Amino acid sequence: MKLINRTINFMLAGVALPLLAGCGASEIASPGTGGIVINNPTPTPTPTPTPTPTNSVTAALGCPTINNPTQLTDSGTISGPTGTWRVCSLPGVISRNLTLEKIPGLVYYLNPAINNGRVDVGCDGGFSAPSSGSPRESTTVGCRATEIAGLGLQSSVANGSGQLIADTNVTLTIQPGVIVMGQGAAFLAVNRGNKLVAEGTQTSPIIFTSRDNVLGQETDTSIGHWGGVILMGRAPVTDCNFGTVGVDCERNTEGSVNPARFGGNDPTYNAGSMKYVQIRFSGFILSGNTELQALTTEGIGSGTKLDYIQSHNSSDDGAEFFGGVVKFKHYIATGADDDSLDLDTGAQGAFQHVMLIQRPGQGDALFEIDSDGKETDAPRSKLYVANFTALQSQSSTNNEANDLASSLFRGNSDTTLVNGVMVTPNNECIRLNGSGSTADRATLKAYSVLLQCNSAKFLGNKSSDSNAARYTAADVALAFGAGSNGNNDAYTSSLTSLFINGTTENAVAGTDPKTIAGLSTDFRDFFDSTTYVGAVKDANDTWYKGWTCNSSYAQFDDTSNTNRNCSSLPTT
Image 1 (cartoon, rainbow, N blue to C red):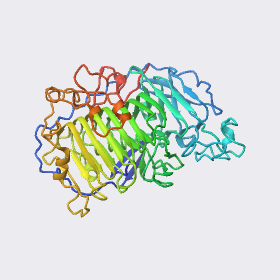
Image 2 (cartoon, rainbow, N blue to C red):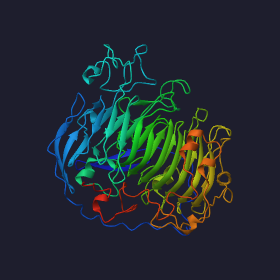
Image 3 (cartoon, rainbow, N blue to C red):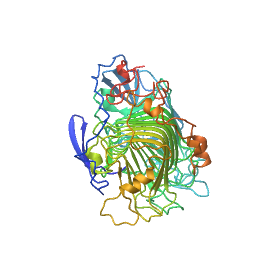
Image 4 (cartoon, rainbow, N blue to C red):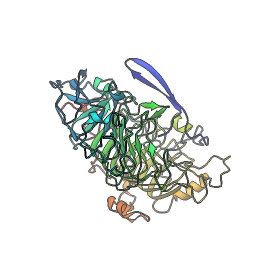
């Protein structure tokens, strides 16, 4: 997450609220701006008219009783192009294990009238689990000593002084096909010592979206109409807001008005699981011109399972990973208005089967990997991403004002790209920005990666930067290593249906990700052995079908079903 140099107009209750988010990288002017003749540009997909969705939903009769001291609030009904839905508002704090059932004609609501829309799963237990010998008052609003009595916690969890003596250990389970909507600053916060289990199916994904989506008011250009989903954990982080790195380092969720802390010393921490999930139209500005993104992970550990998740039209990053250990397969980001994949503050990330697709002329970078200004903090941010297809058909004013290339690797970070296809014919492909000392600056390795860039291809630090760790464009080209390790920076795309490998891609031999030097045993076991580049091998490779939603610039399948559009909703 970073502050972004752009103006966003949010339409709330019919009133335009122009919000200016300012700042971001401003090191150099891109040589790819103006005067560059681009050969073989990727054509912008022709937008298809959005047909009228099928109106078939009848509102449920009421809200179910839940296993929680505070019940769901029946907030009436809401009507849109797909029909009429019963609205059941979630309580501000979920203090007991709870399952959100799939009930026809019902949507669950992160209601701004309840705790400003923030829904906490359990109470934050702190850097490490509290105990009777080390009791702790939770920082979570609604869980503090003067508030905790109303949560109905057992005496084995909270003492008579309102302090936690154990984790609340709440699991929120969401059934396949459930729709959860939010509005404004609303977000779902899964606190340390608690879990989210949101597992849809390929034909019945879970959808987190905006209230405007249910009303039928979202389009392919809509962004930022609610907060997002945050998973907080106890794995190590850097860039401390509290404590000392390597000892008791913690951070607070950026922009959160009330505490939402993360960090600890457990790299295996389990924050739950998410599978076959869509997160749409997220990224509302919480405070200080700082937005959330669709999915934010904060100090989660290797026990957390992330698979088959689509982020769509987030006003900030598609997803951002702050610290911790992240293992993520089948990630799709469509239409992120900042970076499609952002990793920082000491995160150790392994990703495979990844599609990053930006809206034409919008967004910043496809990748942004950094811990800028904290080059000596440990652990360093490390990203391994294999079998990815990253598409930026046009440059944008946002990118020209900020990251300046389709991928930015900087600060205290090491990135390894494997079996990748990056098609960004109107922009530089890779920028490395060196800072700190030469020994501490960002690094890049690439294996079987194809780049289609503008004529400049690579960027380094600005020419006036006297830092001894600075990179030149020639340094970046050398780091990428075209002509070695199967890398090619003079590639021309033959992708079909936007992202499926064609003749050129399938002529390239992939590198088995398991053979990459330096991998931990955990990451080596995580990766699938593959022999091809890109995210989608051929027309028979259909992992992206069924659970995703379509837009005019990224169509995955079944475009004849209007309820599969991201601007609509499933009716069954």
